[in-house]
Length: 248
Image (cartoon, rainbow, N blue to C red; front, side):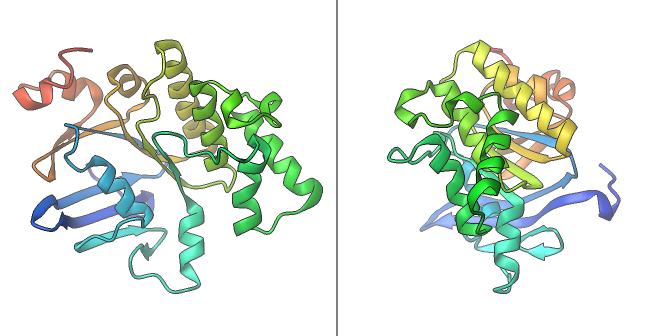
């Protein structure tokens, strides 16, 4: 895929990662355009989440580079680090809301920690983020009082509250019924259209991938083995690739 350098939001160059003698990533390369949605497919336990954690900085690659916003994620200055992290949002598989905090407090937390918002401005930001996922009325509920689908949407609102330019999704529809999964997929599309967000999505949910993906990449043996549009991958003559679509 030919891309003008100014169109690239994220670039992964020959990233490797091992845990002891177990080599997980063996030279991953990927370029994501601004406002592009990329879905990563791969078998369980083969390193998909490791890629996301390397991008966000929860893990450090053994070699290679991850570049976004003109910065190498693992060679940041003290001044660059908060800027980089603010611009990349991470939606954890389970939502990762704080059980002891209300929905309001969960969304206030990153604003207070990273932006020092206070008072009415803080409340306005929280309400706006919840409104964007259709859950303004849940603001004073506790996480235990909302459904799994609502929790995913609230976690997405918390991710959005710092207005990231890139969002990493780790299984955003896992455990959800088909109707709610479609709602989450439609929210991902809405973010692309309205905010021009670049999205990297790990999923085993093929209907979700069909709806949201501009490009599908397949991880095999520690590298991105094949890539293309959803239609191209669905009709691939490669047996490994085709296996992801046989049970759609």
